[in-house]
Image (cartoon, rainbow, N blue to C red; front, side, top):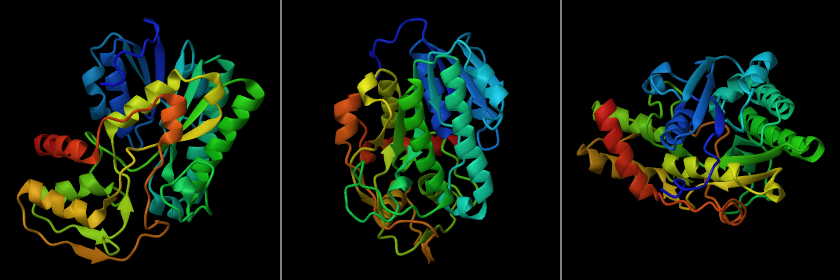
Length: 324
């Protein structure tokens, strides 16, 4: 993998917030495999203990159950840590429209607590999850940093606010922060259950069980679906990025463009089923098309994603076949 020989000091210590979630647990796994210490902080509100049980016997692993909305918890979690990978957040555009106050408290105040705790504990690098949702209604493709539109959901507002707060912490307090604007991440351990589940695992589970999935809209919307290995690479390379790149946000994607209806038919073919989907109304707050210009991350982070959608979806399908 392109992140295997990055040259971290042998005693490097990582804090991963939201570490029992989809992206967080994959980061825990990758960093432990590289031989470094990991502290996982999660309140298990959306993350799952089962995602991290496999690490419990690893002497380099420590689990802390706690909530980033509590500053004291954040302060203790950051003690002795070199790098913070802040993945703790509630996702889902539609759910954020239903729960705006909670998204402000969790995604904005929680991230601000983590920034302050990292600053006071003199953390080397603070890398955090942002989102392609910050582009809002900006119509041009590919999406490029510095060219954002009107925000379309409380979730998008929370992620944009995180970027602005991180920028302040770099500017005024000398904390090197790096925002990663994830584009439709998918892969092993992504939860297929619930009303707000991501589309790929949800479709795979339904098709495996002989159920008829519902596509919101006409299926002609497009996304830059990004395999989890690319996201791991971006997080680790951000930890080693220059101070000159700090305070910035970066697109994290493959740079491709997949149409939802094509993905659906590809899944039915791969799974050997013949089920036509239902079509429902568009989801509130959704945009029609999204794909990423990743040149800024290439230049300033050395990000060089190896996993295309085609390569990643094959591995993801096999994982779900074995684990659902």
